[in-house]
Length: 106
Image (cartoon, rainbow, N blue to C red; front, side, top):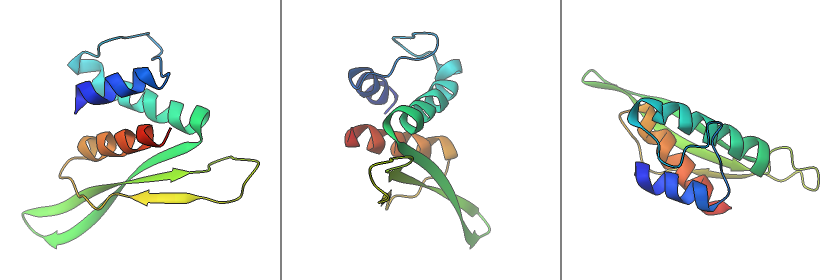
C-alpha cells in the first residue's frame, strides 16, 4: 500500500517538506502525517483514525478511518463523511487506508 499512496499523492500534487520522491521506511510515518496535514489544509479533507474497543482480551482495540470533506469550506456548510467499513489492528494501517480514500476524492 505504501508505494501506491506515495505514487497517487505525487500525482495529486503533494510534495513533502523534504521533497522526497521515494519514502524510506524510517520516515514513512512522518510522511503520512505530512500528507494528512496537506489534505486538511490544502484540500479541505480531514482524515481521522478512530479506535474501537472490542471487549475481547486478545484484541482489545481496533482502528477505523474516517474521511470528512468540506472542512473550512466557506462556500458550503455541508460535510460528507466516509467511514471505512474495514477495521485494522494497527493505527498506521487505518491511517494509510484513510489517506488513500481521501486521495481518491481529489
